[in-house]
Length: 294
Length: 155
Image (cartoon, rainbow over all chains, first blue to last red; front, side, top):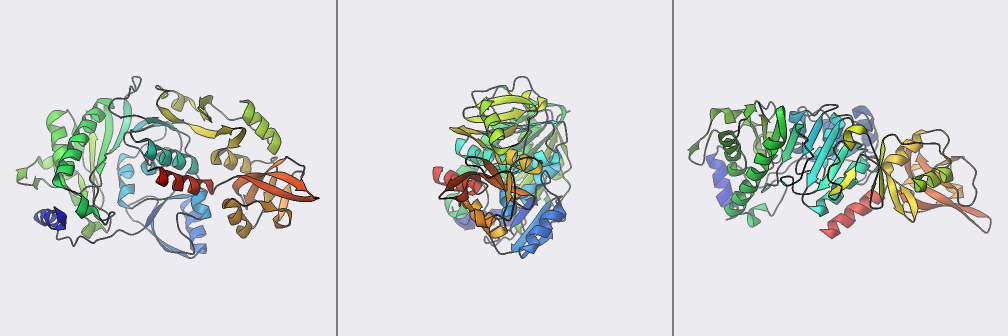
């Protein structure tokens, strides 16, 4: 289908994108093991320049420095993780707290899992599930490196796993998605609308299961790094049409989600979700919805 | 957990992890009560709480356990500078002349944490030959990068 097809879609949604936008390198300080000031001081002593990301609690843009940010003492010691700025946002919306029981449905490679553990100060429990064994090795590596002690991880389809009767206070569904061109230079050449629709169907299967695992009063954050409405607004509309849920306002950078898209008029409540457009936020494309089960 | 006790003796540490012990193939975990309550399918479980280490012949402590031991008084430790520390993190051994400071007796077979300031980079075992002593690298934090490369190749 190529770049033209998708860029025209984005144009119809009000964004004239070039198709070559890139995101800045970002890290997240791991407050389980260190403080913001300590990590900033240590990396600046190695010649790096750090700029706090105003809408994130522990996120920094990083430049320069004498060594790769993925191969420094501080990285090996688990004092920070490399995590794209927009990808740090969903956990800030979910706000998992100490003592809560949280489900991370598509957890690997674990960037958001370790971020949640830091918010929870290693208390309570995170149940992290992923269907791909190869990606779970990365999750296990990240849990150990960053000192996470409150996570139980399973190799399973999050829909089919027997959770032993647990209903969760909070659920993060960072769903497998089509991704976006900002973080994948070959994205346009390998994606088709068929992929998008296939992913959207899988996401609806996961969304339905997520609502079933959420306790009444609990919060679900649904997020993708896709710019395609089928995986974002249309899926949340499907959730509203088929489950007893409420949408809460997501406050942050970017734009309100779309309520008129692909020739469809959606619920005005969809505007409570948030869209990250690369030309607006300087990040990869992202979508975040905050769902409460009454 | 016999293997852990043997390691703690070799490194001169007194340490008792809190929580229930969970064995998962060759890995040993300690799980607090909130985590233990979420263990419902051992067949599919791949991680549970605090990773203490792995049993591959000898017990190899995790980075989490080494970090805790590095903060305690009592374990055998050597301190090195940043250059030697980086070489150690790349898998090299530590020679006696590179040790800035130490705590503990250098006897054959004893284990020592390798410290860069307040940070533990791993540990090694004392080897003595021709009256020359060195700390043979057993585990270092560079293992994370080697594992990440391994995961990429697995994919």
